[in-house]
Length: 231
Image (cartoon, rainbow, N blue to C red; front, side):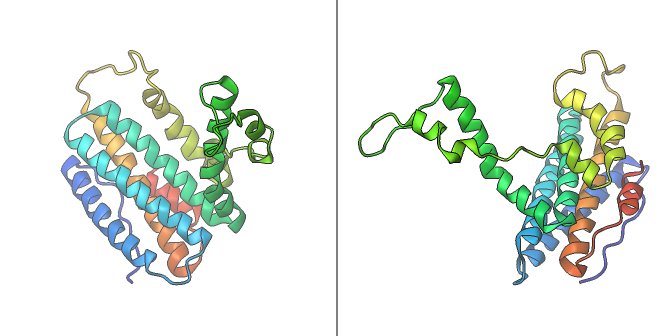
């Protein structure tokens, strides 16, 4: 497989769209190739998941960019940056990768526990139909749930706290629906361009993180990621 090379983010919108399309296609090819590796373990599977996820988000970013939907695009670019933080996080160590893969079940248990405690859900024995809610709540299944790793912590552990502070923090206002009167012009094309650039940058970063780890078993230098994102 050829080495992954990255050019500076385009300054022309049409070139930016073209670059995003090309990297989506390239990343999809990498996913197919990486998934065929017979020696993939937890860390490799986790970073492949991140690459697949960011490609999906990039496709959404492309569609919302072309449709000129700034809020949707900004929200998707934020999710792409989150995926970058996680991709970086899982390649740092086997322990991080295991925590990441375990977090799905742990989050499901955490959400279930909240609903059970609030009385919004119940657990019944499938055979006797007896209420087992209290028994489940008092079991180790619901008591010994590890504390979640926040996205900010993941960014910091990956050396990307600057990206989190400079980019992620501001666009989170839009994603959370708390950016009232933040936009000065209703048809500001600069916002579309910025969010599309962030989407492309995050995709490129996850792409090179995945390639570096899957192919070479090395961690991408954080300086490379910073340079790709231009922050």
